[in-house]
Length: 138
Figure (spheres, rainbow, N blue to C red):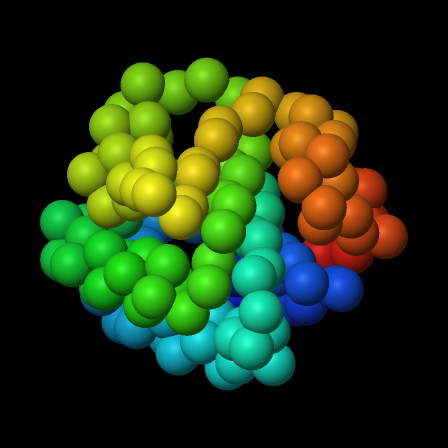
């Protein structure tokens, strides 16, 4: 069984590549690893970008786990989140059930290309070296 996610940090941005279909165990593992990687950024504002084209949705039991992770991130200075995936209505529906679009201190955007996502984060003060998820995730 191949790994269903990879998470790493560059500058003040947590990057992630996710794939496959997720059960609650995968969601718990992702949440734990995400918090571990993000822990080094909690003293100031930070951003997140996730590549979701290879993600195949998850069982309903993942939703409260991911909602709790999102709440934790926002409470710990996550300012911007960019999701990268080709338009997909079912994927969009499940992601919207788990992740808020914005609050007074947080904004989430969806982009069809990673270039647009990285460009937006850079314009908000969060540039990163990685400009190609496939190269880093390989």
